[in-house]
Each structure stands twice: as C-alpha cells, then as structure tokens.
Length: 224
Image 1: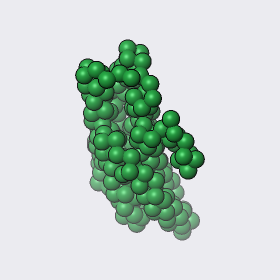
Image 2 (image 1 turned 90 degrees about the vertical axis):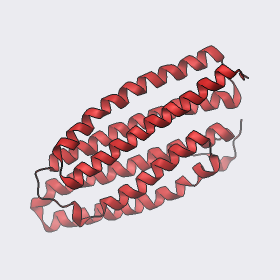
Image 3 (image 1 turned 30 degrees about the vertical axis):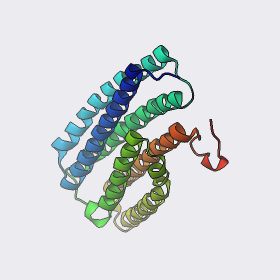
C-alpha cells in the first residue's frame, strides 16, 4: 500500500483540486439562476462561456488522477479513493453541462414576460445549492457519516420539483400563450433536481471510498 509522503501529498492535492472545481460548478449554478431571476442575458451568456474553464480542468484532473494510479499502483482503500476522485470529477463535469442548459434557458427567457415569480424555483435552488456544498465538503473531508445524510435530503428536492412542475403545467393550461416560458422553466426545475442527484452520487463516492460499499447498494453491507 503506498504510504510515501509524495503520494499522500499528491492525493491531497487532487482532493483539493477537485473540490475547487466543484466550487466553480456551484458558482456557475449561482449565475445561471441569477441570470434567470434577473432576466440578465449577458450573465447567461457569460455562464455558458465559463463552462469551457470547467471542461479544461476536467481533462487536467482526469489525467493527473490516472497518472497517480499508474505510478503508485494503489490497492484497497487507496485505490477506492482515487476511483472515487475520478468519478466525482465526472459528476462535476456533468453539473457544468447542466448549468449550461439552465443558462441557455435563461437566455431564451431574458426578453419574455417573466413567470418565474409564480413558482418557487428559488426554493429548489436553495435546497440544491446546500446539498452541493455539503457533498463537496463531505468529499474533501471523507466524511462518510455526513455524506450518508444527503440521500434523504434529495427526497425534499424531488417533492419541491414535483410541485413546481405541476404548477407550471397548470399555468400553461390556463394560459396557452405561456407555453414557451413554462416549458423552459420546467427544464430549469428538472435541471436543479439533476444537480441534486449528482450531489448524492458524490456523497455515495465518499461512502464507497471509506467503507468499500458500492453506490445504491449500501443496504447489502458490501465491504472490501
């Protein structure tokens, strides 16, 4: 099992780098929602452009993680941590793509009659943003107990998302001219729910790295 000081430093650096990238994804989420609420086309466009930075870091981090695995040939918990880093890196990249979809919807709605004040998208955003921050914190600290709590919080996001979509469908039926706006807002609400799912996946990676339990199978008590 690799225990050299250099190896430990490399792994710590990777964890911190992935965490910083996760924070950048959170900032893009903030800007996409802000662009929607303020009907700020310039901010929406800038958010879409900033995803390029996230994509570049994704490639860099993936290569760095693969190199550490190849050079050190870790096993057991050390290997699980690096595999979890790889998969978390992918989760963050997916969140970047989701925020681009949100920003594109905000751009389409920037010059339309606003309907977002009639549904509680900010509530969904607040719940998801807190989950994202806590998932990143759990991953940085390898806090499996904190990570395990995130799955139940996802249920609340699902419920709020369901309520929002139902309300938007009702509005579109009552006001057929609003279909363009409601369709885009439904997409944004679903996007936020998908980010919550990514947060849960990251939390599951913490449990996998610490306990050797596979995602979505913790009740089996599988260990390595």
